[in-house]
Image (cartoon, rainbow over all chains, first blue to last red; front, side):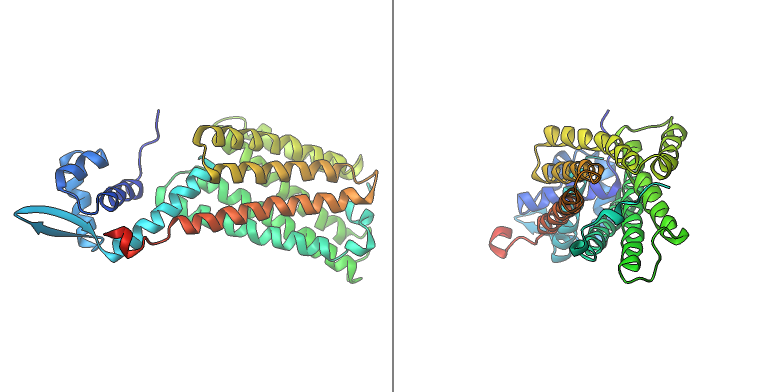
Length: 89
Length: 222
């Protein structure tokens, strides 16, 4: 059975999804991050509160994009993921 | 008492062996510290064992290195209780570090007492029968890690996993050389060189990991 993701891993996956898309709609982020709407809302509040993500509007549609701080956080997450991959624990 | 390995080191290698060990210890501390960071972020218990394993190995190498340096500069008498204490610390912490990795790689929930009884049994054997038992014990313990990290590489196909596997393979091979010290001094040198190479590969992997977190360029962002 796959180990449950920690909060950091969930946030990291969300940041990865936003970075890969460039900008992403909330529903797409929910599917890419494999989260329920309620859980995603909770994490989004944290990410927006910590200014790792910001909201933008384009033609009435809401998108999320990474901030500079978000890119830094994503960088740290990728390092951690590579370390975990190295040892496999 | 058995002859301790430092007494069969070529004279020209005195000091260089300590430098190699201190460098390996520094790398082990660095890896242990990074494992602690991952533990704090992910709460995965495995990284507690991983960090402690590397810290134990680092401590053992520092103890050994300082003992050897003290001998080289005549601050310590050969065959003195202090020299044997230095060796004991080296052996105990090195074996403990490798045993922690066995516990981790086998995901042992039980049998820890037996594992550490094995560790403790090697020390009197190596002191009173022959130091080769210490290196044999290390090889037995390391073989589990080598097998696990090979499996990890096969599963993930990642270059990071390959580097960790190679580094532990080299550290395992170095124990073979150390076990053969009795036959020729050159094995002592070979053991140190190969072990350092193993730790340098771990350092290189850490360098690659730091690049994994590199910020994308502005063009990539757009």
